[in-house]
Image 1 (cartoon, rainbow, N blue to C red):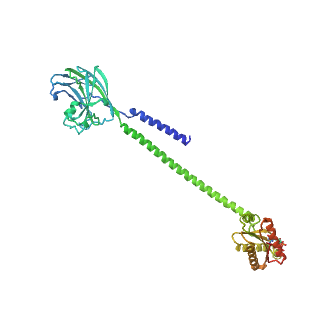
Image 2: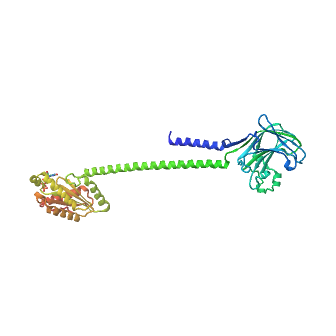
Length: 433
Ligand SMILES: Nc1nc2c(ncn2[C@@H]2O[C@H](COP(=O)(O)OP(=O)(O)OP(=O)(O)O)[C@@H](O)[C@H]2O)c(=O)[nH]1
């Protein structure tokens, strides 16, 4: 599996997980607080005595272990009531934060003269509550019809409202008059607001408070953060990978450059070797080809003068015969080195064959070529060739004329050289202009 496919698969898995996190949020984040109030601890039974009534509430033995109580509503108070309060924590001021909760479920059996039951979720807030005053905690209230003796009731937090009598009595400002569940200290179950006199029987089996572990906004923020982190990690990984690939590519390019440079220099060496005379180090016939073409082109296109000097060592056979072939070689090598020392960088010196040489002078007039030839003639004549002593050479100079080709130029130079030989050697002859 290649990287692209792997990435696509990972992306698909992440998208599925995100969809699950969004659409399955209820199920994933669901948190349930279960109260099974069979013990008497943390439970308070009450009647309307504090409101001037005479209703008494009694705890009863229940064979199933449920919390059972009864009361007789009597006419001592115009609005008689009785009820039971379960405290959610030991502290009276520090309750449970249920602001992200949505539902309360009750398994409650009721038999009595009233048609309804009231449930209060009591919230402590120091802005209106004190520990010493039990009714100072907020009465988030809902009332529901409890017509059948055995029942299961699901009450939504959205249906709770704050009891009006409490708002009035505690003089609560409007900004605090909304239902609040961020610090629930107790839950109360009370007889209904019809206040009908007579016996009331309650059996509470179980209470469930159902909500979310985290708020929806926090949950979405967490999903966004996870995505942002994953994108960051992915980008970091890509950057590191690309940097590595770039480094590797550069390394390979550098290797290639080095190999090419090596091949270039080698092929240049071979090229030079192919164009060079092995004995004298001067160019050979192939070596002058380019310079001659260039000279011809310059003459034709820019009218730049183009001259050549043919040179031939005098009586060279005699040198060979008298001092040996090796000595003859040495003479050729020395003459070649001497000429090289005294010509311009643009002049090209080549061995034409045997003891004959040619100097190709681009952008050079006849006069200057003649001047160079005379200078070389004198230099050679003055050179000391060890046991051989003095050696001379003859020169033929020619310049390209309008309409002429290279062939004619070389023939003219050759003719001039021949003339130099004929006229006594160690001299320079110039082809007719
Ligand atoms: N040592 C040596 N001799 C060479 C080489 N190439 C040609 N020669 C000799 O050069 C001599 C040329 O002799 P010739 O053509 O008769 O001319 P020359 O003796 O120089 O007489 P002129 O040119 O008339 O002055 C021959 O003896 C060739 O063998 C070489 O590479 N090395």
